[in-house]
Length: 249
Ligand SMILES: Nc1ncnc2c1ncn2[C@@H]1O[C@H](COP(=O)(O)OP(=O)(O)OP(=O)(O)O)[C@@H](O)[C@H]1O
Image (tube, rainbow, N blue to C red; front, side, top):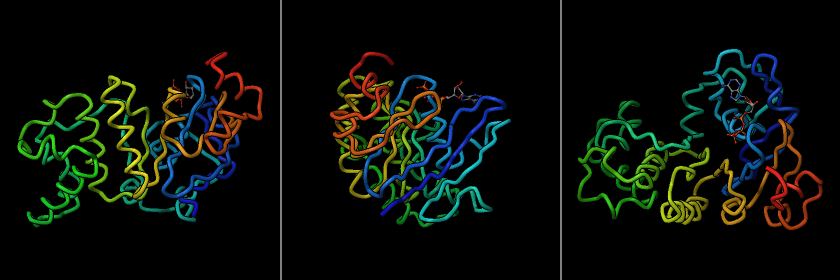
């Protein structure tokens, strides 16, 4: 099943035409990687999937993004959309509060008060983010005291606690060392069983290792989209070929 469907999407920052007539689909419970040289529009596209670009002044969008067949640019509840399509950023951004409170934050903001239920979801989320074993004995510790890799997994747990269907990840490992990166990549393999994941990455090796589908962008255009192995081994377009072979980018 297709989770997200993008049809003839254009995005302008003022006069800068940053996304040019993009159409493709993002399948359910798969990892889709967005790759391409710096400035080609990967992060911009990612942000269109849960309307994070709404927060930027001067943005104009035409075309359509459908989440489970519903146009997300129609008159919908944007907060609800962002719960169903969660996001993890390049730099881990834990709130300056305890590990427990970070994960419980969104649930409490929604009005959940039942302590037992909250603790259950916090534990489940930390387990799903492969962090529980490392923090179960210090849930009251300040989250900012965790290592960078742990902080990023905490941010993943915080997103998971809201029970999203899609998780958007914008270069989630670019600030991490190889070991912490490996842990997150392993985690992705588990997460894809439950969630649809869209990841922006600068690392072609990472895209090859973790993604099922890859979309290659070039100056605001979607040049090529397909199965990851196919796109890397048999690219159709010369620009894709040049990029995946490391000739430029
Ligand atoms: N907030 C913004 N306001 C104005 N222009 C922006 C904004 N964000 C991005 N752009 C412009 O949109 C284009 C695409 O940028 P975007 O950040 O989406 O590319 P990217 O492929 O994610 O790049 P990188 O790999 O360097 O993060 C660029 O021309 C950039 O300058």
